[in-house]
Image 1 (cartoon, helix red, strand yellow):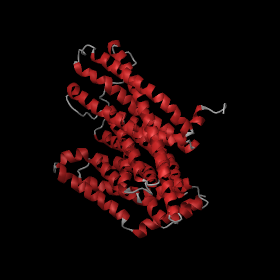
Image 2: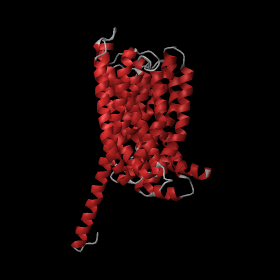
Image 3: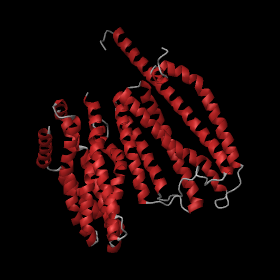
Image 4: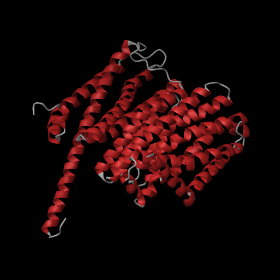
Amino acid sequence: MMQSFLALVRRDLGLAVREGGAVGTALGFYLIVVTMLPLGLGPDLKQLGRIAPGMLWIALLLAALLSLARIFESDDEDGSLDVLATGSLPLEAVAAAKSLAHWISTGIPLTLLAPLLGLLLNLDLDAYLPLVATMLVGTPAISFLGAVGAALTLKARRGGLLIALLVLPLFIPTLIFGISAVTSIMLDTGGSRAAFLILSAISLGSLVIGPIASAAALRLQLQ
Amino acid sequence: MQTQTITQKLANPTFFMNLSAKILPWLSSFAAILIIYGLTLGFATPPDYQQGQTVKIMFIHVPAAWLSMMAYGLIAVSSFGLLVFRHPLADVSAKAAAPIGAVFTLIALVTGSLWGKPTWGTYWQWDARMTSVLILFFLYLGLMALRSSIEEESLASKLTAVLALTGIVILPVIKFSVNWWNTLHQPAGVLKGGLDPVFLKPLLFSAVGFSLLFFALHMKGMRNEIIRRRVKARQLKEVDRAARAHGVEA
């Protein structure tokens, strides 16, 4: 089972790399949103520095959102999802493998881009390490809970827009604790460790909830 | 027949239609009487020494806020009933409850905001409770949007049920995180003796009245949904018959 799980992750990663485009689009979107922010808020570096962690997190959420629909869509279109569903791997594991591949192909690149964008927003020097750490720990929740939205809207009309409405509320805890872990270090208010641990707990919880709910949604549609 | 529980009997839509036809007039009248009594009593209360007359918004705001949460609970229970027990009425119940719950949530938000203006000096305060209710409103919108965007009805019901159950699992986490994020709102104090009995009595009457109103609307909504499905089934039958009459195999 582990072997087929890893094979599926490898296959999805291979597809993401060879298709190109999708990951690049998410990164480009992240870059352009962060560039638009000072244009909208004014070039005051002090103010930008203060709101930088929040802005980087929100822009990352939006960039990740763009690529969520892709998790199941292309496999549904060419029928490979049906093959996967009839295979030996339980659908929960299929959903988990595809979410994991999404995290590696989108969550990690976006996280690695974040510190670079932090330079544009005059992010506090002390905040770089916590920012990257919280994003690394928090982005799995985006991929695994986002997969639920992707699975639910597989057969829906205007699925892309719908995903945003369905999953953004589910991302709120990740957003809140991700930002609060970073800002409490920046402002030296304490409580950063607690926020970081809760963020990890949320991610671990979504590793369980996400695949179960995604698999339930997929099973209903593949019947 | 004797051994059937009430939930099993309710699986028969005709049984539900007959039962609800008998209950509904009573439920609606009791709701109307209690709401009118509770609100009249509420408007006769003396003005609060701090908030003045605006405290009277509470008699609508608090029941609406309570029902906004109860309706989501009802949707979650119905969704569970649909996915696990395949109860035919559970889906009708979940579908009917969503718009009513959304409207109560909106009422809670609007009255809260109108109350906030004279009390806090602003229509919107990003405090923990208002924010959670707003997020709850988004969850309702998501449920309705998902249902309306999937053509096949039975699939739409089941997928919406999956979303509702995912939502109820994550809802406490959202609530907890929003609380962590900010707490400005005064803590819930209805039953902790924080509220004067002068206000408590009308509040309880209006809360029970609005709850009955919710159940009456929900029951009416379920009846409408069942009738809608019957009409649809009949139309399809009619189309089928007409097609056969013209020698076309349907």
